[in-house]
Image (cartoon, helix red, strand yellow):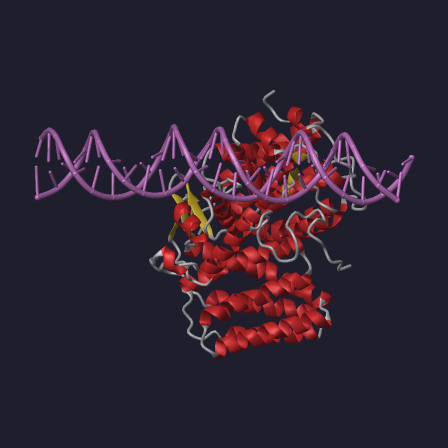
Length: 245
Length: 245
DNA sequence: GCAAATATGATTGTATACAATTAATAGGCA
DNA sequence: TGCCTATTAATTGTATACAATCATATTTGC
């Protein structure tokens, strides 16, 4: 029973792919924008996100910026300190460990469910994803490749059609992006592409067990690609990192 | 290495047991209060949470109430609809399924980690928990027993010392409380006490494997105690359900 | 009498203004 | 000169006010 689910089905977490349970448009827009900016390294970890500054950049008042920052704090991408303000999260080695352990626990299950629920159209979508990933890798755009890699994992979660787990995976992958940004040591990212291809094959055969194991190995491999010993130092200035002036 | 972790360790999700990544005092107070109220059935699922009304009850402005409601929306306890307002979440059968499946996936792992990291002091704390649970059950206070049961699961997560998974478990248990409130059919809750006792025994022996299996069985059992076919209807009035007139 | 359209009321979305806390700077004393 | 203290500036916490949207009730037409 893989029934599609509308946004008013009693879930509260909107439609198919909204990360944040936010009603309006402006707040959500800022949220998504900052989300992207953080995941794409345009905002360095530890950077202060002044409400005034962000508000001015997006042409919004502090009220809405505040809401956006709080939402991001929930996702673990932003840290808010009392009377000090919001900062881009700077996950420590401990958190990095935990995030990948959590992924290693949850995502294999997701992969199995996805394999079992896989439709032809889903398969096509995943193939498209992989192609995009491949071409990004070929053109040397590592940041984009990383982003697409995350999108691949999220797409799998969507196919599995498990909103609760999917939500968790989304959050974990966002945090993973930050973590990889900070602690990635491996030069090549081709292994990811390989792993994803292998997964796709399992999906095509609707082999849930294989998908589960492949995903687990994949995430453990990602984890082992991290250098979890020392932290990188944050810098950069805010205004230029974001769009609009 | 089970090092204790302070609130400024780079996690952002404050100290040891705060559910919400909120800086101030007032917002968090309202959050926790509503959280308790919802979990203890004092606020029926589907009930509208008017910003004005809640604000007046707590003597706070809409600004802070709004933030609290958004935080609760992230936890899945509140649903926010654009231009319509916030409501106590009313999880559907589908969500109920998913929440318990997620728990069945995550909590056994947590239980194993907890068993391996278990200290004598932790064991004592869990025993206290169980005693409280037992006495609440004896005095017929089912709501309190349910609440304490949840607290028991959360305590295990705390002992496992896995902040990321712990956070997830917290959220899932909160939602479970709502779900149980809506769909519980079994008359007796003594089985829970039994299961918890068995878990405690495994913990005392530091038997991670047993703890894992016991926890999984326990959650599957809880799941099977739900009647997932029709929804209950929400009613009640807000003002009297909350403290302060 | 019933249905549709309009007008009214209430509630949320957003912006701005003030208060409180914190960080930084300048000054004084040992 | 070095360190502690007090003042000042900046930023966040909170409240209030206005605008936009939605639900309800009334009115109008058929």
